[in-house]
Image (cartoon, rainbow, N blue to C red):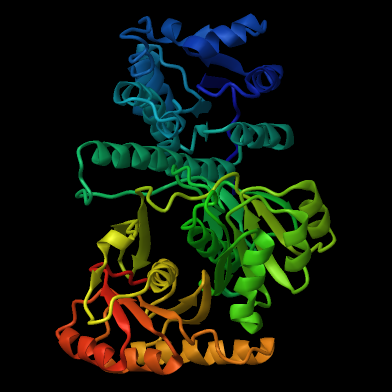
Length: 528
């Protein structure tokens, strides 16, 4: 049977004072004695609420610029005491310690301070010490104390009080679990920041955490449970986007949309409009153009079959002309930095289409971390921020690439960075001609990409596949000449690849014999 605990005394110490006065007044109306600290105490008193300052509880004033105020037995004894244990009850009586039934604490805004770009000293001063200590203490003693780390938690407590006259055991346990998750996420942000400050890429202990953004209907498959959580990183994309319309985003929608937006972020919006169409986290068409409409139609032509039910990402503000083209086929999600009124009105007619406005583009050169779970652990690496420019290339064949081939190679290699390995991308004139993704050998990826190009040409009524005269990009080296020869057979006249195989000489010789140009990047872009 659940134990109901009355709430007679509450300690409130909040940095974010949203809803403070109204909620504290509700507690007071239930007869709860309010104890508070510093600015919170002053705010409550100014609102006419009876409040006891924590200094009157501890017998010590706040000191050291507020660094020391709640770290005292009178506070922690009230949070930790097991009131059904005789020794604890005796200690409380002897030392004048009163129990705390509700702790409402939100922490110094370290994450927000960090995101604002504040200097080292300011970040350090926004590391909360007393708050996490109290939260952890109260959560440990969940049998007697309910811990609220945000306004919604206090509302749950008030609902329990209204319905049951006190807090239910289940509520207190739920709040305790959330409380420990909150302090863990808080500490993970601090520890990650400190590691960055001292240049530790792989610290001995690594932690990640963040608040839940959304409970999802299910995971990758209907029998899996899933949710979307945010980190402290402020990177434009699915976590920053406003959803203007459409059904709730699914696990796969979020994953694919993230992949699409990261890819389109590779292309500077001031230089050209860019559109990427994604299916199952792989691009099926990518193009740059004079406008989003131009770029979209070029990207769509690469693989119109796969584009059905896909994700469309744009690097510029969406306009009505582009929206008119996008809605002509079924599209799950459209994401862009912004959209004008015409575009929004057009998309609004497609009620199931999700329109996301991210407010900016992700910076492909911005440092960051990525991680994935393994059995019994997880892998962490820095984000792939590698970018190859023309001066980085080494021509290894007798024939050097033409200026157009060089442009096509760099475009294709930039796209290949976002294609699952083994990846082959054919491109010509700023548009992908064929994409081969996720094959167990590179030759098959080259072949599949060529087949897709042939099908696209047939659909469009072109006289030949767009791979004729194209550049071919490989995310990793060709271990044998067969993959390169497949690209030559598809019509590629230039190849860009990292190089580094023990058979590089054989591959170079095959390229020379075919009369194509080939360059090495000395940078691999595996993606799994």
